[in-house]
Length: 89
Image 1: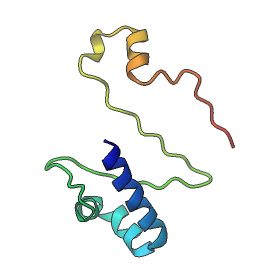
Image 2: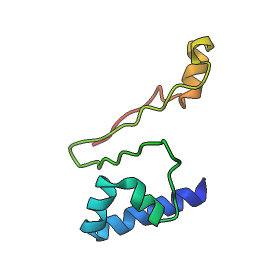
Image 3: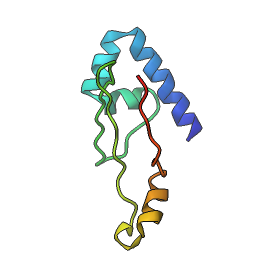
């Protein structure tokens, strides 16, 4: 997973330097990810959004399998337990 994070970080840095690459990444992320040796499995969709100073995107993770059988405490821990989450300006 660390290698994939490094690959994504390199791609993000390249996008910050190259507006054309950034535009292609936002419009056709699967193709650009494949170019950066991160192919996306068939049948999986990819959406790229950009945070801005006045807009933050938060990705809601998919529920864990069997989530209807878990207690609230177990679900909180599965989701990372972000009870004290605070945003700073």
